[in-house]
Length: 66
Ligand SMILES: [Zn+2]
Image (tube, rainbow, N blue to C red; front, side, top):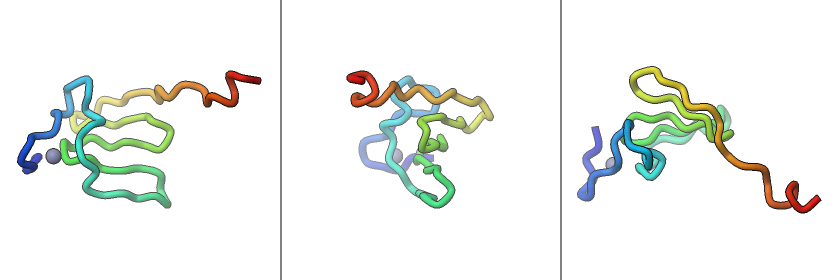
């Protein structure tokens, strides 16, 4: 799927989010990466094989300071 000169990480790699964004749907809150992974703005992910990854963004720094 990826046709970049330096191949992006595949969907089953732990660094899958490092793949390039090929389409963004900001109004819907998700982006499609060139390895077929869909990344949602809450950091949840949907892999090409249908696997879902729960959001894994930590709390904001200002929330920790409070
Ligand atoms: Zn790529």
